[in-house]
Amino acid sequence: DIQMTQSPSSLSASVGDRVTITCQASQDISDYLVWYQQKPGKAPKLLIYDASSLRPGVPSRFSGSGSGTHFTFTISRLQPEDIAIYYCQHHDNLPWTFGQGTKVEIK
Amino acid sequence: QVQLQESGPGLVRPSQTLSLTCTVSGGSISITNYYWSWIRQPAGKQLEWIGRIYISGSTNYNPSLKSRITISLDTSKNQFSLKLSSVTAADTAVYYCAGAGGDSSSWGIFDSWGQGTLVTVSS
Image 1 (tube, each protein chain N blue to C red):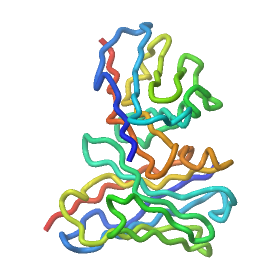
Image 2: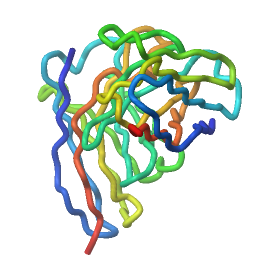
Image 3: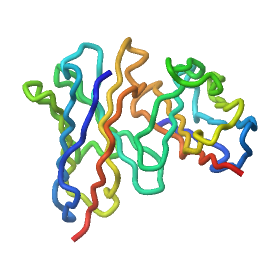
């Protein structure tokens, strides 16, 4: 199985700050990388697919980049409603696996 | 976009079989190029993909659970189901049903999710 390692596991930032999360794959997954946002008690919500494509309707302050084994997810200006856990997930080959998540909090 | 809703017992005894159903509304479960999956999340832990089914009945399972999983489809009811046998406390989790589709490169991008249902394994 491909292992997905996210860092940091949690972070605290101020409203308006730039937030960056990284995701490392244990082998080359090209751009088969997805980012989800999960708020407490809710199902994950798709934000970014194909490493850098923003899902329609998702605010443009969210972005993704990377390919191969190293990926980043960025919130350009953190908003109070962005408080959540963010997960990366590969879909290169079965089984699909997820990162352990990054909890984003407001300072 | 389709809506998904999980249903089933919230409590299962150890060694018994966990059974959940996902009802799809707002669209047909028989849509082509769309896979239906089960995903679970133990409390405070990461998400784990369990397995998926296609309208043909073809399935793929996570090797870590393969010997205990059965996923099936009932197109007449627009539902798909999960059975997980010989459960232990380690199977306690929120279980989600989810859909992914489009071209073949999108079959692992989950763009629709149920709200999730907590299943506790306890005597």
